[in-house]
Every structure is written in C-alpha cells, then in structure tokens.
Amino acid sequence: MSRPGNGLLPAPPKQETYVLIAQNIMVAYDAHKSMASSMLYPIADRESPEVPKEDLLKMEEDAAKIIRKLNPALTNINPIFVPEFPLGSSLDDVSSAERSLAEICLNAGGGTDAADANSWFYVLFGFAATLDVPGSGPVNLLIYRGTATRREALVDITGWGSNEACMLPTTQSTQEKYGKVQSTLFSFYKDAWKFGLGTPLSKSTANAVKNVINSSPSLTPWFAGAHSLGGAALNLAILDILAAKMLTTSEILPLTFGGLVVGDTDFKKAYEATSTNSVRIVNMCDFVPAFCDIFQQDGPTVYAQVGTPMGFVWQNGETWKNHSMKDIYLRMVATSDYFKLISMFPKAFPVGM
Image (tube, rainbow, N blue to C red; front, side, top):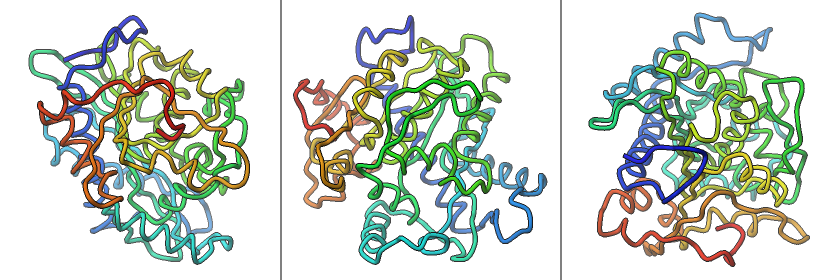
C-alpha cells in the first residue's frame, strides 16, 4: 500500500491504493442512494434555518450506520453532507433546457433524487473515516461521491465562464487568494449558493476531518478520493484543508476519477504549489471533465486541471457510460490487466482532461 510522504510523488500510487479509494467512492454513492430512498432530512420550511441538534445527530447516526454496513472495515465514520434544494423550488432562472439536461445527467449517472419539491434538504455527499489496512496499518479517508441529484446535475452544467476569487481557508476570517474558480462550483462547496441555510459542504468537511484527526493516532496518512462533481469539490476541499493547516501536503494523497475542472491557471499554480501529491485519472472517452469547454459561454477557455494526469481509453459504446465510476473507473483500477494500461498524459492535452 503506497502512502503519502515528504510532500513528493516519487511514483504513481500502487494499484491497491487506487482500488481502496475507488471502492470507498462507491460506498459514498451507495450510502446516498440508501438514505435518499428511505428518508429525508429537511432543513427549511422552518422559522429558523438552524436544524435542531437532535435532528442533526439522528441524520449523522443514520448515515454512519449505512456507511458502516456497506464497508464494515471503516471506523470513526464522520458523514459529510451538503444542503440542497430541488430544481425550480428556489431558483427562477432554471430554464427548461437546463432542467431537461440536468435530468439526463442524473439518469445517466444513476442518481436518486427523492426530495420534497418545496423544501431544502441535507444530502449525504461523502465521509471521513479510518480504515485499518491489513499489512499496512491505519489510513484515514476523505471521500466524495459524484453527481446524484438534479440540483447537483445543474451545478455540473451551469456557471461556466463565470468566475470569482478563490478565497481560503473558508473556515477563517483571514484569507488568501488562490486564483479564480468557477462561481457555481465554488458556491456549491463554500456556502450552498449563498442562501445561508444549513451547514455548507466546506464546513461539514472541515468538521469531519477534524473529528478524524482528533480520534486517530498522530501521523496517520490520509487518502482522499472523489468522482465527477466530487472531483471539483475535492480540489477545493484539499486546498482549503491545507490553507487552514489542518493537514500538510505530505500527509494526504488526493486522487480523483473523471473530475470536473474548477479553477483557472492561477488556481492551478496555487494548488500544485500547495498540494504536490495530487493525482487525477481520466478516461479519454469521458466527456464530463470537458464540461468547461462544452458549456462555457463566449470567450476562451480559462480553466486548468490540477494534479499529476493519468489516463486511459475506454469507449463503452454509449457516451454517458464512459463516465461511470462503477463500470469504468472502478473496473479499470481493480482489474490488473486493465490497470497496466493507465499511463501519464502528455502535457499538451485538452484542458478538460
């Protein structure tokens, strides 16, 4: 099992590291589906935007039980949530075309969106936890899933070309600028579209990571992983965590699969100067990482992917299937003969990839 070390990436992680991360991304997907199909956690339709503490505890307990059932080897499980609202319930600027495309994105990704159309609600987006790896020892995990709701699908396809300063850390009043990032993606992570309802993804992540740090032995290495929309959010989270000095770059290895691009070239420079261990894997037939080129309004592309680029070619016969975490990315890293085909990208490659 390869581990982060000394702030450098001497070689790509070993196969078992990719598999471990990919399997737990699927745990996050499956846990979300289980929660969305059986229970909802509304955070609006109240006089106060604050959720009663007992409701939050129940939500966290339910999520932790589901995650533990899906992967019994996990301990110290801290679920990570994001506040969302259904399409059309709170925003009047959602066009019918955008709504239709979001529906296609959701269906293609196998997402589950069972929310009441008139209320905000919490959605399980991932978790932080500890895993004891046989023969290697404990590692801590930070995991995000990808798109699984209509609101998240809209986040994927809107806002390209609209950017704002990436001010971090989000948890502190004293902040620094880390280039510019796509506004919709940043708001999804930072403050849930500036509505001020519920605990945003940034704070939920920070709380989960702190809890795991405080509950695990010192110097326990971290692996972070995400897919699709989660890849963009994880890039923000990693930089946020490092900017807040919660962890150092030598302590955490971030790995994304088919992730969305999130920032400009200045963001890329700031990110790669801060997180020197990041790796991204992209199926060159997966067009989701290129959404910045597909949906951007007039003007040149300003976005740049981050991390050491690793890729492969797998055409599955249907466009959306090329993005599947379960059927493409997990199979690619879990099958030894396929894994050998993953290689570093040439530097001159399309921005989205």
